[in-house]
Image (cartoon, rainbow, N blue to C red; front, side, top):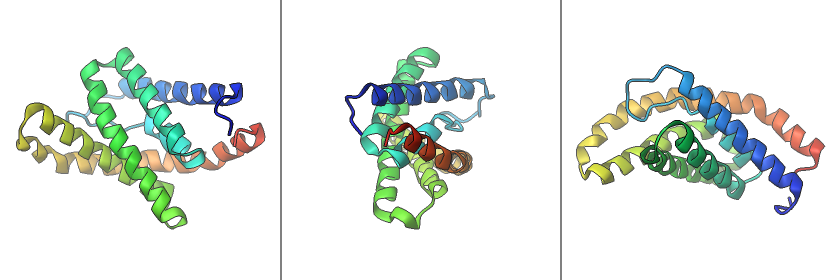
Length: 173
């Protein structure tokens, strides 16, 4: 795909916008009383873009979405947490897709990404507070991540065939 084309730029803007809408919807869901725990609805878009277009496009969507969402809905500190978890998650999902190709489902890829997002956030928190004690929250975050990864993974699985069909029809791929 020609990354300089107006079609590509428009498509990527739509993906970032969709991820931002999902970020906003996530703010409407009652908060889980665990710091950093969320469903991860915007990750559906990241996973779709990663699966259909690749790592470079997914990182663009991730960075733009987390930056704008943090400025609109949360804070600059939450941006750092979101990016630390999001980038580690994206790298892990990319490696799973790249190394295991057709042997792993998008749901399993989502699970790996969700767990690694929590790991990234805890590692960042440990660096900020300069304490290893924060790692005690990780098992609970991993349990929540498994549930969140299943939700986003099944949503992405449902949407992926339609997403790829749309890309093919529009000539984006």
